[in-house]
Length: 250
Image 1: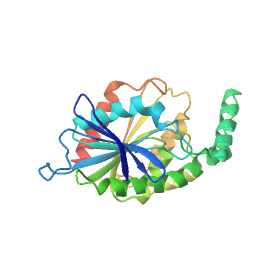
Image 2: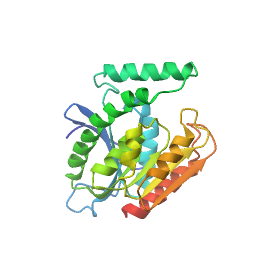
Image 3: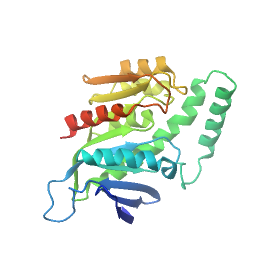
Image 4: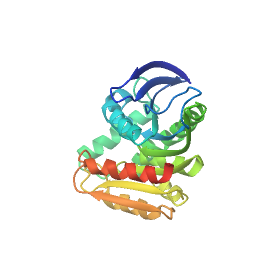
């Protein structure tokens, strides 16, 4: 991990951009965290997932989530997803996205094959990168466990929850297409889950989201459904998620 820039935000949060090989990322740490020998105990970490729209486009929402988490005493970090931002394009994914968009605009059903072509290769590429980032982040003296995962492409979160034992709690946003194969993986998820569902999400199959929630194998899982579309998440939903992570990471 190589830090490329550093700035202190007006609320004291330290924002550092980094690269991990060719992968860009951002780390936010609360003012209470420090790499110095006199620092307080290392702070817990939340990995901030996001859709593959590029870090620059997602930055306003990511930094808002990071500031909110820092106020609760958490460090947060995110990385650029494969094929997004300034990373090399993935032609197969671009074609799959175009096919899916064309079907939706035409009012045609989105086939399982379209969803698989778009999501499964992304999961296969992204999850090892998240694990590599986690290795690097936990090597920093100011960052400790436990670790949570929040948001993002839900299929990436499912795979991480299954294969990464350092992640002890996850908050998912039920707003992306999910391959059928991921339902089987969801049954292997056992960590506490906080799932947010926008009831009128125009880009989400509500019944599929409910079926996925039912499939999760976690003994502790809660579904928080709010009226409104994809971008109409109420502010208090973030507060509920913060309470969930405080309960499980502190």
